Image (cartoon, rainbow, N blue to C red; front, side, top):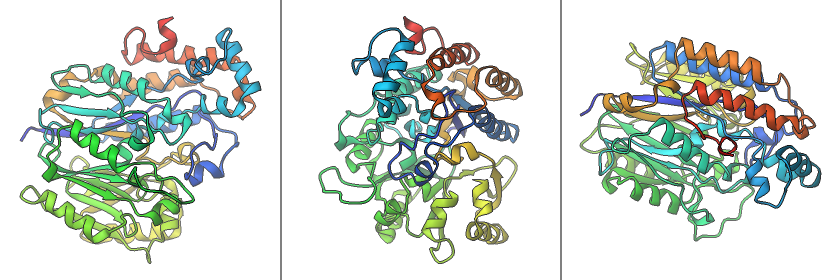
Length: 447
């Protein structure tokens, strides 16, 4: 068994952070649609969370934001002229499309890709499949840039396999690591990979909200990554959870090591799901299930507070897990009371800490949405682009960068400002150098 750690690579909030209300089934996103956002506060909040984990001794990396407004996407739809003119015309003639092309949604890195460590894969490499995110227009444009970013951060092909997205067709709708949980005795040991889906691609789906992940997408990823079928579990998310606003499994479930922390209504067939997980883990480790009863935390409170959209962490120097939850979990009566009972017992979760990521939460993403989990062996770590790994110096440099390039506020009317194109690009140009991403990282840099 190789010595390994689980690193968190957080999405850096982009300069156009705004409340577009573009995500179907995301209740917080819909509720705050059109509100004035604070891009500078948002990026500084995210950086504070990263610094907090790095200072605790966890490996913390940064994933760069994408180019927004996404002018190439608008040119593909027939808009022409200078880049500023393309943006101005699109905002005037097709405002709904323009809103989709200016979303800062890549900040939610849990949707960036599905990741399988070498301990689980047939060729021993660390595998990534960027998500195609087909359910929503604003997210469906992310895949190619995510692939570019992963190749820049994990560049050695003998250690890392970065695949393209699955086919851009609804049968293979894929939402990334937000619907994936890996359990293992230790991060470097072989584990059980749990891929959660909302629907079968070939069944009818009649519901208030979409089921974003298909079983066929999850199965294709397992094949691509060379996962052992005996150690791979496909679990159906509960329709009730989707209807309650759990648009991804990570709104009702999170795991770390052998521990699975989940809501009673997370899975369509709870008993079968847990039995399948036990079988996949047999001979490797004993799964530890921490189930939250619906009569203690109603599903509506779980979604509202994002109790499960928390980071479950193996904290250096502590025997029990730490749950890093959003402040909204502390401010919701049922979830605060549950967390107090949770840590008072002798279970695997010994402490709950709270993070202020309100700018992200108002758009429907908690601490877990902001990070992509990547298990790295010592050899893997040595091959990662070192410029993206968080420390005090990088934190200070990125805070200074954000204060120079980010607007304090962003209203819906501000989004139509043609100057936003050049402002955003200036920020990304500077960031490319800070993070050592190489020449031509963004499309606009290749012109």
